[in-house]
Length: 335
Length: 138
Image 1 (cartoon, chains in turn yellow, green):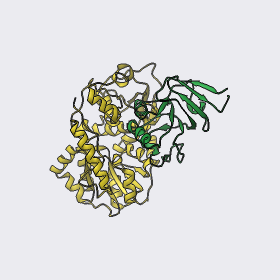
Image 2 (spheres, chains in turn purple, cyan):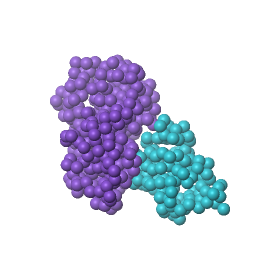
Image 3 (cartoon, chains in turn orange, red):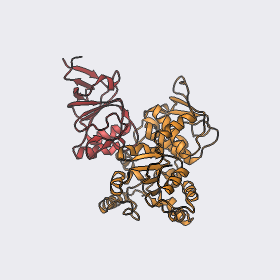
Image 4 (cartoon, rainbow over the protein chains, first blue to last red):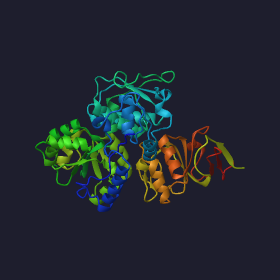
């Protein structure tokens, strides 16, 4: 039974620079030793479907990561419930999972209907739409169908959309006719479609706006970045310098980091003053302790999932496009 | 005569305690300061309230997988709710409660955040599928 790991809390190459301490690193080493002894493949990534091995349609998997579950269920047509660490570990030990929920056809039918009247323009807006649908659904047992897309969005767009949908709504499966893997079949009489337009997306982003605030930290993570996102980031920072009082953290998988190193992308990003971390994700990396150690409050990101999580971690978070995050990081204040 | 409300059979031990009620959702990762035992997410309706040993009555589960193991860690440190009452749970909350040994029930005939009030003294019997309100007779 192949078993893989989600992001860790510590990147040993940079943890002191981030204000993490040796006790955290020692705990991380114990976890690595224990899981390795157990035969787990230490992939350290929440984007295994973009970097390791994507499951096939109909394949039953047990993922302890909501972003991976919703992407596998929806985009790929694989079958998983939200497994927590304990039940995913039990599945790895036994090769068995309980036969319920999203492993069964009956639960994969559509219960909510949404129609996009405006196309999201970047990953932060894809996350915003995921959040809007998630809040409207608000339950693990709701399955939304989303219509009205003008073009095929791409893997990173659906990664951010799904991660936000799962984070804000606890939703594990969505359908986009013509794009996602399975036919969207309504569970009963189709409900009235709910329109989501430009004003809804703008209103969502405006909730997190804080123009002029001193900017402490910019985070690109949650989910970890694909190679294409890393390349876009390298393009955005070329020839620029991050403000000395602002920290920029980029989190990706070890596989993508190695590729980015080999292709010179990491060097371009770090030349601007950003930190490229591998195998971690920001909110799993002692986010509260990092905030205290570095006196961070104001955070900016292009991840809707991250702004949702960090509200309880002592951060005030702003959501904006990658380009605006970088412009703000250079200025040292939220633009 | 205490009020007795019926629900779907739940999990965990029989417990008694005071209700803390809000029409909002729950995630151990998103909403709590687990070292101080209070709700800290500013947008949560229970922000600033202490949850330790309270019977939490909320609409449902939200967000990610962390509640699956966080409840166990909270129980080990003794900074945990005494029971959880939801309209509808998800598999993460369910396994989290089993793993932690925290009482959990859901599926009542009505909205739990209206049926119960903060300050109600409750007795939760998950196996029987009942919750008694001990200090009210209506």
